[in-house]
Length: 257
Ligand SMILES: [Zn+2]
Image (cartoon, rainbow, N blue to C red; front, side):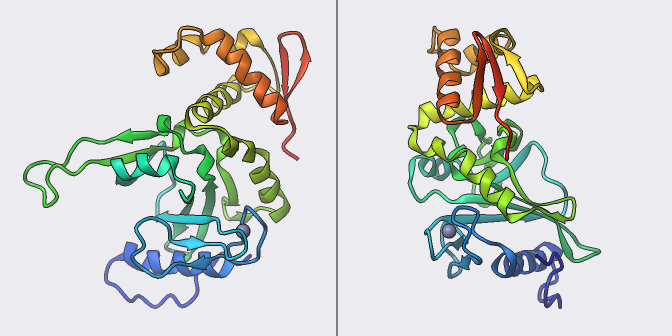
């Protein structure tokens, strides 16, 4: 995998517009499909409402966002309502995030957030645009990248290092079970995954998870039985091979490869 951009003559006066063209070209030339391993993904004709690329082999769709600075806790995305509708749609695209280096004209980080990590909890409604704005009243959204578990951020290039393709494909497969859940069940699983990760230990106890009880009650105010729900979700994560039960009330995260 080459990280440098091809044909970097500046067609636009804006740096970000040029970078858009360069990163699109890079995705087209260098990116394989993380779902089926197909060597290339294809660019949609311009002006599609959401997706930018698709895989001709498995039909998975991808949206590209690129920026100069490293991605932080929030990524600004399009219309809030469109995003909420997308969550339930089967052709919701996966999100490809590229962080590039303008001095080197190359890709620094490229990661994919699989679409099954897109749950209501990670979409934040922004304030409507002011009356004075051209699109007054329009409501955009943020993707709360910080709320997505590490398992949902699959690096293809990390700090200028391309990651092995087998690793990317394995990481992708590891959480595909989320696609078989409904939106609410998926939200809970993603949230419990994130709690498990933030314990920061490979082996942990149920009590470690119960420290998130308040946090989860706040997130799901209609649920009066957070503890049983946590146990249920841990069981599901075990059934899908994400973690193992060691002994009563004790769990171990499954190795990534
Ligand atoms: Zn594919």
